[in-house]
Length: 321
Image (cartoon, rainbow, N blue to C red; front, side):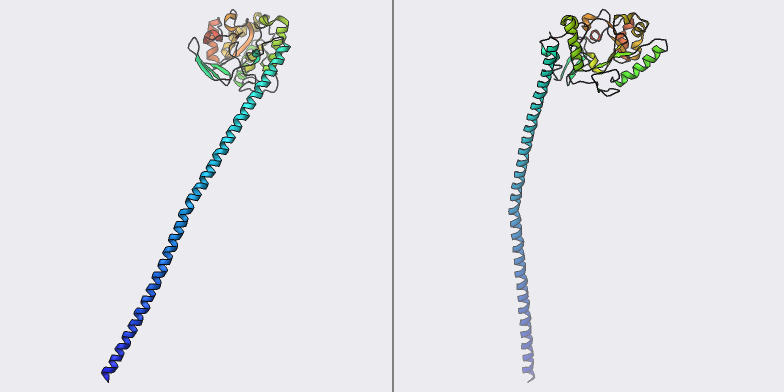
C-alpha cells in the first residue's frame, strides 16, 4: 500500500514537472516570437529610413540647383542693370558735354568727357609712381589735376571742412588745407597784411560755363593758357584757391610778395610759378596756391626759386589735342 502511494506521488511530481517545463517552454517560445517580431520591426524601420535618405538628398540637390539657378539669374540681372546704368550715365555725360560745347562753340565733345575711369599704374620720368584710381590720378600719393590728368565730372573734394552744397564755395575745401590757411592768414594779418580767399572750389559744371565764356571771348588757344577745361581744373579738387584780386598785379603787392616768400611754411605752393609755362601749361599766377603739405612745399619753394609740380615729379601737362 505504501509503495503504491509513493509511486502516485512520484507520478504527480513528474506531471507537475512536465507541466512546469511545458509552461516554461511556452513562455520561452512566446518571448522568442516577441523578439523576432520586434527585430523584424526594427529592420523594417531601418529599411524605410534607408529609402528616405536618397529622397531627401535628391530634394536637397534640387533645392541647390534651384538656388544656383536663381543666383545666376540675379547676377545676370544685376549685370544687365549695371550695363544699363553705365550706358545711361555715359549718355547723360555726353549729352551735357555736347550742350556745353555748343554754348562754347567747341565741336570737340571729348574735351569734357573727364577721365576714363580705368585704374592704371606707371612711373614718371623721375621715377615717381603714377596711379590712377577711379579716374583720379595720384603721383607719389599727391592728387594731380592738370592738362594731362583730368578728374571725373562727378568728383568733389574728398574731405571738405564744409560739405559741398553748391557749384562754388570758399569753405568746401580740404579740412587740413583750411587749418593751414587760417594759420597763414592770421600770421599775415599780424604783419598788417590782408589776404583772403577770392575763389576756391568750382564744380565741373561751373567750369564748363566759365571755360566756354573765355573761349567765346578770346578763342580756344588763348583760353587754354589761363583757364582749365572742365575736368582739368585744380579748383575741382578742393585743394587750391585764388587770393585777393586774382590778377597779375597781386604779385607786386605787399601781400603778394609775402605769400610768395612764406606760403611754403604752411604747406602751400605757387602752383603756376613764373617762367614755368612750358611745364605747367599755364601762365604765371601769383595768386593761385595749392596745398601739398610742408615737406613737398619746401622742396618746390627751392630756396626762393619756385619749381612746378610737373618739374618736380617729371610729369606732363598737355591736352591730347
